[in-house]
Amino acid sequence: MSTPAEVASGTLVHGAGSIWRASPGQQRHWAYQRRFPRSASFNIPVAVLLRGELDLDTLERALRAVTARHESLRASFREDTRGLETLLCGPERIPVHRHDLRRLPETQRIDRLREIGAAEAARPFDLAAEPVLRAHFVCMAATETVLIVNFHHIAFDGWSSPVFFADLDEQYRALRHGTTPRPAPADRYIDFARWQYRARGDHGAQVDYWRAALTPVPPSLPWPQEGRDADAPWWAGDMAWLGVPQDVVGAAQRTAREHGTSLFALGLAVYQLALHRLTGAPHFAVGTPFAGRTSPRWNDVVGFFVNTLVMPYRFRPEQTVAELVRETHEKVMRGHENQDVPYGILLDTFDPPTEPERTPYFQTMFILQNTPAPQRSLDNASLRTNKLVTGSARYDITFSLGWRNGEFALELENRPRLVAQDTAVRLGTDFFGLLAAAAADPHAEVGTLRPAEVPVTVQRRGDLESGVDGLFRGIIGDWRTTPPGKTSAEAHT
Image (cartoon, rainbow, N blue to C red; front, side, top):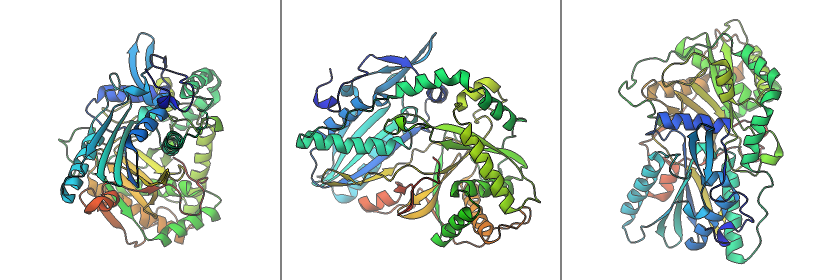
């Protein structure tokens, strides 16, 4: 049974036992997790450093109240003759664990925190047997607590994070001070899933666009073979972070404005060139995640809304940088206009040839983060929200740009079985050099463009600092999604 405190956001519209049809995107995640049950690739583990006076009992009640508000977080899944269905549990079923480390010496506290975070981040979800959210409260000191929350991507995306933590703050304040939180969103994730199915028959023109764009099927990228670990599991992943001087980013932003485009489109154009230089492939495709929240009605809803758009590319050496940027801009805009068809439905419709364990149409994902800035407080406690490393990889290479600790940086995830981390780092270094070269001479032909000399800093998973703050700067990256003073309108997630 759910108590009134646990559902402080209002009526529990979809209570325990409610069932509905899973969305097309959720079906894709389900199929992957069933095929690779040991993979944590689609875990989204978040560590939150809380400093200040906290009432952990109230915070736990607030967390459960948020799950009452967003039923996607209480989901497990089952598949039968009717297809994949979502089955809800009550908020009280969300697993919340507590760890009191206050009596341990500082070094042991840090080591134990690492162990708890690493174990949770790397633990796969059994989507048929447990909810898609797990939580830990790790008490480090009288006024220092780390909240670890792990979501499965089947019910959570980048835009969901600020929604979740803003609601957690609101519910915590309401329970502590007796205030009334906002009503739950009128539209729920179930409404989004139903809308996607109802709209299938209206997307004929969009399906035709993607059929033309993806014919012939782009070949798979032939990654360099040196250094890869052929014995690693398919789902295993590694992580590195690359940083560059901010004048490189500033020059790129000015170049994008001068060409009437976004930093995302300029970055994608340059990334395509870097991939060609690395692999020699003249024809391939890059995946790009779009937020999928095509109506404001979804903005305050937690769930998996993201749709993957496939951007095919053909190398033409005589093309100038400016022409490539314009072509990429137009391709991004056309993709945006045709983003309503879920990627999974395109796969079902086109049935492209596939390679074992690789994503159809593309093997690398390009991301420029644009979700709102993270929550910075929880009532009177300060709050820092950070990502944990899972040890798994979603794609051969995930190339994710954003602002980390106030600096523009690249987060590189690679699949060691197919791509060595040194190769991925070389790709990232090449990208920043080409970005600087493209900004310096947009009229150069891409066939003769060479990377500029750019100082690049590289941090790998083992490059960790001591102490809680060091932990949050090391294996856990504090990602801002837009630079200070800027909006997120020009980026994509």
